[in-house]
Length: 355
Ligand code: TTP
Ligand code: MG
Image 1 (cartoon, rainbow, N blue to C red):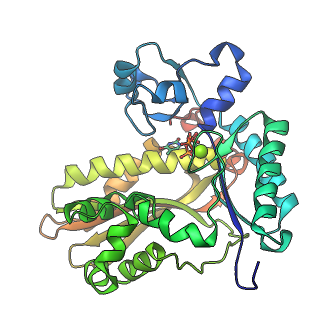
Image 2: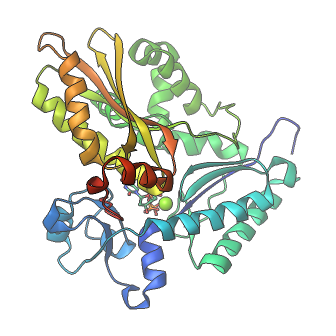
């Protein structure tokens, strides 16, 4: 490989939570398995096995809808400690191959293996080796573009064609709002982005537009960053349209708080500071925070505070274009548990985790 060419592997496990459940419960193998909240308690789907996906079931869908689509589905609650342990196993496998491992979530990482290989063929062999180790140690499969259990090789000379065919929502940093806006303009793929040109994309999306154009052209110099100390866990959403109605904002905050709760549960942490972020339609950004010793871990603990913080900001006159919820000053649940025993023993629900 020439000096400037990097070899980067992207590894993502297949139907992660569901595959672990099928691994640990052989009677569920080959059957539609849905991990997440229960259909009769307004839960949502965390993930579904490939057998259930055939019925149209997918992550973030209300469990009740999933049950309607797939009446024979087996619903299971998430077992985060098990998923975290498996995550540590696979990350250890990755780190044996290269120090440059950037985890993106429990089941997904980028590996810069440039220094470990001399040719593209060697990079492919290394990827196969890693998949075999994952299988050997966890009995799980991994892939990304060709799921499940695929291995996709994109040599430099094919990168262009690959990116041209790639649907816009697969590009890094393209969320629901950008996707909707691009679709409205008839933009579906990387090729469409390229045709649109850098200037137009910049006009529409600012700096992000220029970045998107470069990604579509295959220019992406971001390094694989191995250490990223986590300081906070947050979720935010740019609204499809600006809103003024406070109850609508509260509904959105509830959704965000549930997502933050899920991420905290996945990571097995909690935080002492809760922050509400609001961007007005004028783009002005304001945040309001509240801290407490007994911390925040569940959405139901965050919501009353978020409502109060929101009421301090929103006056019904100015419209909001973005809402965000962040938990910081992170601590382990053990520390939090101790603080809670002192402060308010009645609020602590052990293992009460809703997905
Ligand atoms: P993903 O890798 O996005 O999904 P997956 O591994 O289940 O399926 P795929 O084969 O398409 O990769 O997410 C990893 C895990 O994160 C997933 O098993 C469950 C959890 N998760 C949620 O809880 N809610 C969500 O909305 C998503 C997308 C994932
Ligand atoms: Mg996955």
